[in-house]
Length: 382
Image (cartoon, rainbow, N blue to C red; front, top):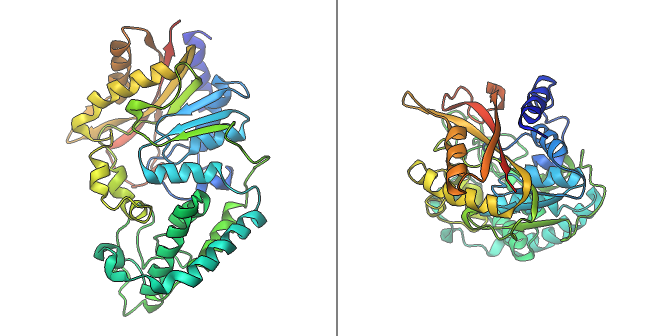
């Protein structure tokens, strides 16, 4: 396709509503295992994969985040390659791709975990748990949660671990914590005083809530087969050093960290802690989202993306236009220039398509940091 037809195709997708509105009632419920700040909409992902690829081709996401791209690729009959530095992103991506084929199979795995939790939870000494973590939970709930995560990590059961992350904190009864925010972990004890809302501070059974979470996960699974290692590759590393072969990917679709706009480690610090990343600030210092190091690190990422992409194939980067302190940073323009410069003009911009982000799609309503999303389509010359 030529440059004009790609731009017109994307504008047509947008005009026809292929990614407008909420997809919560239309997508596979595996896409909803656990929240993720800034995650891609499955409708956008599906439309782009179907436009740029054919069945059985490899779709790669170097910043896999919530795992939306690799899961959607597999559901559409493609092969998936995913990478992320965060253990939470790695867990969530593997959890979706390694989900049991049906609800009954998932319950059998839950029963094994239940036996471990019931046998071992009382042995946990909460004095060894960080104080800030203890403040979120009833003591028995916390012991059960610690045992459940230990089981999942030891067994590498990323599906159950993802489900646990999905019910870790909220103010609703189906979640494990004291009243807290769902997306970003902070307690709401002023809004829900303990003396007035005693039931919100009582013991909550981990197993009972996890079973209900699994029921929700299999409401619309769309799993037609159990995917094997031949269908996907998942790596945990910095996108500056992708562990994929040269020119092995047919299409790259990813949303790199927005230019200093999101705090991925801080916002997921409680989930990271239970998955073994006790110092979220250490991870934050390594993430590309940090404004001070963004362009320097994205140069390396773009070189790697160029290396693993096949010749005459396309990469789509979905990025936000960053606004702060009255200044606007056009991330798409920045990355377009970087891609050309680091490859000596061989990674060229095919087109850029702009899409406004409605407030209903924001994890933080009313924010002015990122109002516009742009689709940067890059082409690798022969």
